Image (cartoon, rainbow, N blue to C red):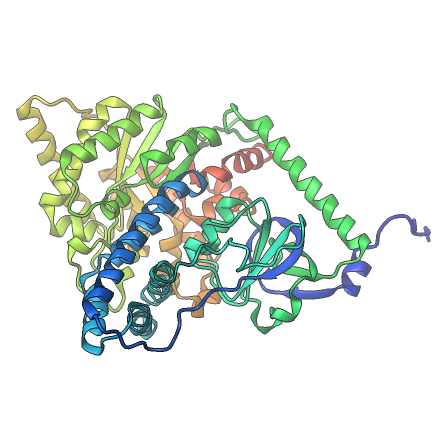
Length: 563
């Protein structure tokens, strides 16, 4: 038996000796630092009787206006850090502060009870948060945290308090890096983190689908969430190693364990450097088969991220964010300019724009959608388009006009039948006829596709294929609808298995039927970026894969190793 070299650290032994705290992996990466707990300044709970309620209303209005301005600044500052798709949450928060019911209830409480503005905001925030928390739909439950976040901002302004990175709210340990610990972080708190000092995030609660986790991943901050009671203030100041990929936190690690993880971190840094070797290369398998590797974006502002990632085009432009940013239905001209600018900026690379997927977790007040018990399966996406053909045609006219400025294609979401596709194409033909009559140019050969994200669409993909030029398989919705699991509901998250044989068979069936009718098939969604699943997608014959910009080089390197 060979004697073990005593100079080589025994990782398993060192790890076994360390105090290990476990949670849910949220944002991969390795971080070293001392735990510092976020100490929020709470609003005073006491009710103060005021002599001039109208003056308190004016104080509230002034603070509300300032909060809206701050959120606008936060949105602009977040664009570079997070991209348009993620930064839009702060515009949604602005809209919440303009909600007439929210504002009216606060002002009515101030006047009726002659109370201070801070108390009124706190009371109404709790009232709204409780209302949302009691709803069955997890998306609506998530709005409880949003209400508390925006209300906390108003109260901070009323009290003259600063943001979370001010010295009185987190303890610093000289120049040592910090691991921020708390019950949960609001989106506005996460994006304001000082990355010069905060290198990791630990939370006792939270969800892997929260805005906070998405922000942490985008910002490259390792995070472990849902640690429960093991994360408590007795850990303040302790040195830890955060392993975000495995959801493990090592408390007071010895020198050997620290060295092991420093070596792992160096290895990961080297891997990122190796990925740069694939920049500027085509995406090909070992056998030479070309795969089109595209990026998903939320707006034209994300085109810079696409270029920086070296993606070969855009496989999913989520046009609904144009509607979420607007105070009213965006007109044809404003949409045309956005689509045109995006097409031109891509310099001939493919730009696939999904027509508005409004509804479910993406709503705009001016659509005046009715409350639904299960909005994910309600009035959304193509159902709204076909129910409001005038709004839909406005978007299609803008897309057609932009088609002459680049390699633009469109696709319709949430398809379940051939009738829906025919109805969409009929409105598209009407838009083409109108533009022809007006002498406005468009690309008559522009590709038209559909998203396969319902079991119905996958099962009749042989009937749908002759009606379109391509399929884009949206694995997130396809998984939730196939398994009857709400992907917004953390309670049933363990049942959401994207690798379920039923899901895999539907994907395989869709690709097979696409090729049988001479059209191409792509995949977007979380499965598309799963490098452990890439070999199966390639084996199924997928032609295109669309992922977040940050995943492009990693996936290209992975595809290069596959037959």
